[in-house]
Image (cartoon, rainbow, N blue to C red; front, side, top):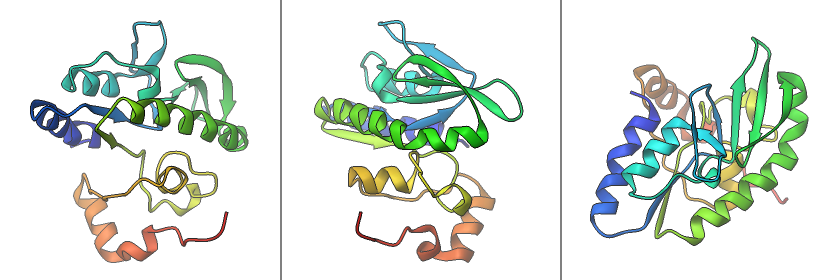
Length: 175
């Protein structure tokens, strides 16, 4: 089961309890995009999550969408608009400026919600992706967002159990 599907009942449950709930996924890689009312693009999963929250999808719910164009590159969509194409290696250098857009979008989403459920991308245990991370623990630290790790597969659960929480965590260091 994907994390997007796993979170969906939570959106509906909290919404039915009268809370203003919003989905947020800092970075998503998918060719399955949905179009927002203002013509922007976001991941289809975030659009469906917005529906579960009974709100219109917003480009701020998925500020960075990567649409694969080849085995080594993707079209980069930021806050709903195409900003260019980037080979994987080059994309790493984009991350500092993309983090600014991610944090800006998170502030927009957070301002209209009682509860924001944030979905990461990939695994926080992928140490090769930690530098400049805008999708998982790097985002959580930058936005001071509490984290609950949920494994969506047996392999992920085994990895978390065998490596332990400490190895998945980023040590606190001064910025």
